[in-house]
Image (cartoon, rainbow, N blue to C red):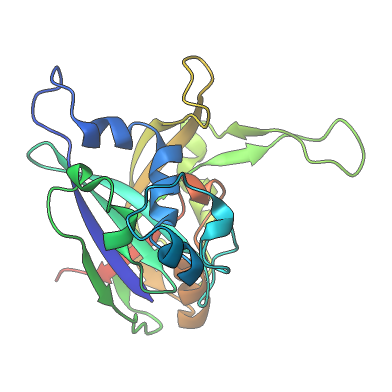
Length: 240
């Protein structure tokens, strides 16, 4: 797998418009541009400087609008940083081409993208620090047979049980820190046509119970709305 860090300049002054801040304000546009990091050879040959509009069919088959696994797709998360900046973390099965994706929008980046290939080495019983932004929702009963009911946000007292119920290959030895909020998605770009998604950021320590199952969750993500920055489970060695 590959991990990318895209540093975005959102500006220190909230009253002064910044393209990076505006871009991060609509996760649909963020996902759209990240998809551009996986162009097909035909797209690159025909539009080397990315002058034509985005079209999903122009991007590499198996990496855009697909299920995430060890061979296809990507996950991402936007994390705030001190100093008025933010970083977009991207985990992908293939090496991305951020030079192409941002060839017509380099003003969004505060630094050159960092990309590294990595593999997790997990052992049963190990403790790992983790961070996850999840769309913590549940389905209501369907009104009609053979149909799915609507998704609704879970209440605050269910945030941790929601995660525990979806944990595969790990357990939570202590209660994680949870930070609720919402993210905004607007496909059309027209005022009043956007949608808010419930966001819960979990940070804490997990214990590995099944390395293979946990690796599957890291690769495939947790919960719905992965196209809008949810589901990426990041783990790192626990501090002593």
